[in-house]
Length: 466
Ligand SMILES: C[S@@+](CC[C@H](N)C(=O)[O-])C[C@H]1O[C@@H](n2cnc3c(N)ncnc32)[C@H](O)[C@@H]1O
Image (cartoon, rainbow, N blue to C red; front, side, top):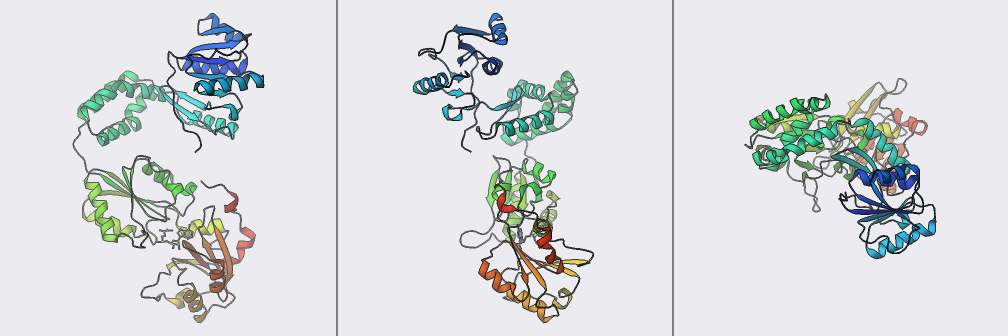
């Protein structure tokens, strides 16, 4: 982010617009809507501005721009077609410490004018910092379509009750829950239906019944998918926006954590610098403790919480302690990584079955059922198998698969850093070591791997970081 988004109060303050054409007219209109006292400096006014002047909505200084015109201004906009004039306005404003915008000249601006979705008093401002104004406008039109025009009325209703709600519910968390219920439930529906009186009555009733007494919280066990934030489910995103506190670990990327409610408390329970994770029992106990404090606790996990995620153990404890919880499935690494690597897990010609196993070593060896795994027409997906890669390849060969059997290794699948290495059981251990593959990496074994060359569609490193 190279610009700080803020909203400036201009109500009753002088704002100067230099220029009297159509572009200036649009800027004036926005300033007038925000309650500014607008002074237009221009030798001539186009008809809309002239009408606004006649209606007393602006003052007009009938002149070319000159030093002194900016005196006392809260902010300045230059919208002339003359580059020298625009540059002079920018210089003088910056000398005087007045925020200045020069239309379509980012280099001369100290602030930019965003695209606006106006649901006053709710206002959404969108800016690309001058990089892609058309994109910003497209986002704006999407939001225009998404946010009902009546949202402004909902915000006005909230403004009328804000102080009373604060008085009745002194704690921030009780107020947040009250407002969330108001904005998501029947009261909001009444406003959207144009029944504002009834909405006000319902809000009074809800406020009478509301209490600051601490209620028991809830735990959301949420699968975050393998890395690409676009692979989150709608429900995951909704609960991420609702949580008061989040327990996360290294498998959940920053791009995903950025979508969690900004003011939620974050607790890292993954591997620390000393390579120690918080023991599972301590995580379970922490979830119970936080929920008992009345918090909405998001336990977010990479992939799917029920696939090699120990999610089952966490909610077993919650169930035993009578804590409410819900589980949101996520796209597991096997599904996400295989799709993004162009390796179908089953295929009529190559594999009629797929097995997910963990390659995690216990006491330095893996005790997998090798005869069952070393089968033709079968895809084997191995989680956490990088460390044991050599052991895995040799066991599969010992138990019947050919040295030349295809195998793929995918690191950081579905993210812009995705790397795919395709080899054979005989050569993969050396190839992976040479290529320096690191965790998280997933192993896929089977004839389906040979399809990668043809179906490889994802150009991760060509895509921008989320
Ligand atoms: C503790 S398991 C968690 C699995 C997770 N619950 C799931 O459903 O994907 C971690 C392992 O998942 C695999 N994994 C997770 N995300 C991955 C990714 N983006 N790319 C490759 N492998 C990944 C790796 O094998 C990693 O060692």
